Image 1 (spheres, rainbow, N blue to C red):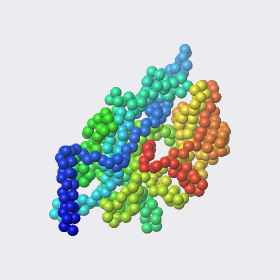
Image 2 (spheres, rainbow, N blue to C red; image 1 turned 30 degrees about the vertical axis):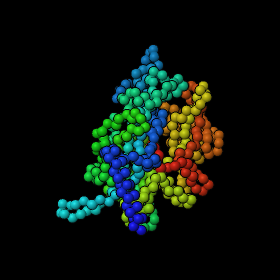
Image 3 (cartoon, rainbow, N blue to C red; image 1 turned 60 degrees about the horizontal axis):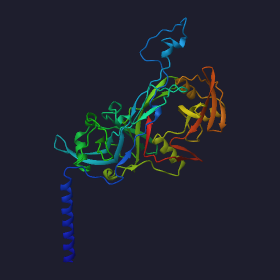
Image 4 (cartoon, rainbow, N blue to C red; image 1 turned 60 degrees about the vertical axis):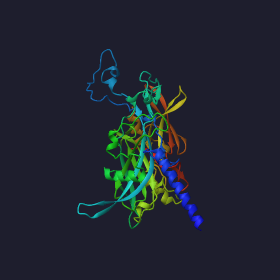
Length: 433
């Protein structure tokens, strides 16, 4: 027994000395993370985020008049009615260690000790030079709102196409059930708590500087030169989250300058900016919260009622109807706009699909097409190609009939019998808000 204890003591001493040597060799370097610990969300740049709908040239006051030698469309007013603006789009890489909890004690001015509970998200951002720009001298002939040559990742050579800083917002939304089991949302914005951020750094890695929500906006995000580049690290903190919260999503803004212009109900337009939504879930109770494990993604269930509830609580976008203009010369279909199919999650009925099956464009589709300069109306005849999923119609364009196709496309879920089939891992999604 004595020999066994002596052997264990010698082994423990050797292990301690080895750890000390490794620590001395590493100096003040941040610790190395095991594979899979850091979850990375790669940039996803969509070409539809890089140009606006045809619109009047802003801040230009031009009177309408009819010239004797030129057409109305060639006058100053006519030539500034349907202007398409192109823009360079960039996007940062985002990575996180996950959503965690911590309980800290602070001494109040009266000498008493206050215990506070916090949720936090340790994250890393890197600039990989991911961008999309265009050669303005090469404009498409058939589709004037598109250009023939797109330049991907030009920000690696031209820093003017790349972000210099990251000024984020982190909005946490959780769902809480009342005594009757009815869920309602509650939202929290990340807070400026520098003392808490320092305590979290001590817990996670004393050698890895974690910037708070204000500090990180003052730091330049360098262009990553290799996969091993460390990037810039920060932490988002929320105080006193309702302990009953179990379905959780966090929306992160500031990772990209991308946005989309969409048709509003009154026929005008709305601007929706692109954001990253991270999804988590946990058992919702207040017992030893700091020991709870918060899981990535959404919970899966075979219950139709629970599937519907989960879809609502994570605001998972449903199927949409995409309008595509047919380019017969190039032999392809170009997506121009899309509208929500407005599926009822109780019986999976869709007024948009029903209207198209009846041969009529919905008001939402008419508004969306008109916003892009295509003259559609509720009298535009629609022909069914595939029941409930594909249709076609024609619009006049410069005196010619232009063919269009409408397709019902799922985004994150689709109907599966009486339930819902989730189409992908839903730990994150890019949304427009």
